[in-house]
Length: 277
Image (cartoon, rainbow, N blue to C red; front, side):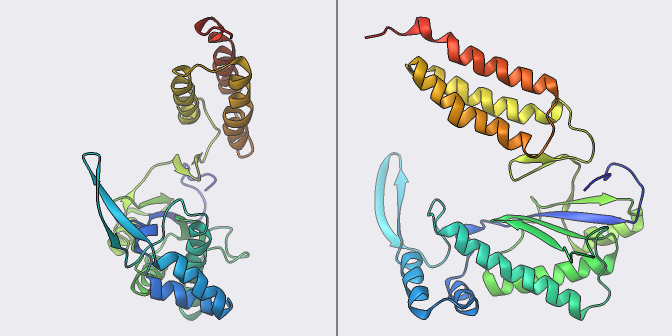
């Protein structure tokens, strides 16, 4: 998505697709077929499906738990196995996209994506689709999404899904929005916890990182933590947030100084607020 803020180069577009209630709408019959299709042992498939399909739920109303009922579809969020199963389900979408592109010669790849045959990037339910900025390419993507929805039960949420255009004429842009009725978005957009930007990272772009770190610190300040406890939280939690962003971007020096100041103040600020035993 480099240079998306400039109207240069071939017309191109990127779709950030929000899957409506992603984990909750996976069809179990489809999941079983996917596991068998990927070559899992039949006994292993049965074990997995038992874990998935024997779940029961209760409803909590005003602090009181009422009844249990069985589920008919979906994967449990928080289950260690669910992200792996969902990844296998989304792999089917990738296969459908590539098969559609192979059959339909009207599809054109996004700039610098043709050599690697990149159409989509997916990490669990975070889905990005890329294409040249023309109507035929958008139709290929839409037909693939519709086919995948009928098979799996997973449908894109048009209200929360966004499309980003670069150097696309207004007439072509309107035609694409008619085919894929998403909301036109503006960068930066968050993907995998970090903002996707098309220019140099600024302090404003890092405001979410600073806010999340400050929110964690504010929550911890209400607890009587020892010096060693605060040091451990800084080393294992706060620093890892900083490192994750730094592995993707070159952070502005102002942001680094701000984060270090907040962590340093948290480390030394509470010594007077508790008594050693």
